[in-house]
Image (cartoon, rainbow, N blue to C red):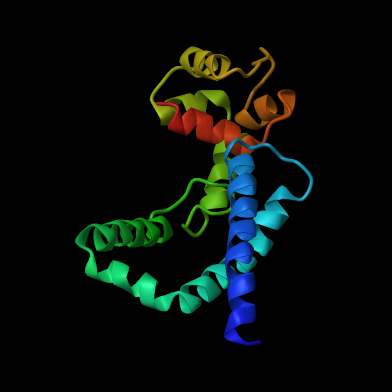
Length: 168
């Protein structure tokens, strides 16, 4: 493919891929689960990578000038630091605790009696129930664990656990 053909494709491909990433990213951020949004964001994001790479290569002379501007280098450096930090800081997302046995520990907490969970979180059972109610969950008197409460509310048990631990 010659340079002129690449030029005709690089910018529209970059714009289209950015539109896809922006819309699907916003939907995922607000946990709006429609169709293949997550799949499209994760897999078609490779098109964005290719498009930006082509665009940068084709406009390298203009692109490289930004590395001589202090403000541009500062912005790029901030994003580089944030990128590295995002990879190194453990996440609380399900299956991504970053620690061996993290899911096993979560399972123990989710199935533990509410009295034990309350003690671990430094509150009383009444305080724990109030916290759960305050986060919009129904808490039946018969509920004996966070797992029971998650089932009752048709919620992911990890979300309920994170709400209890992170809600302090």
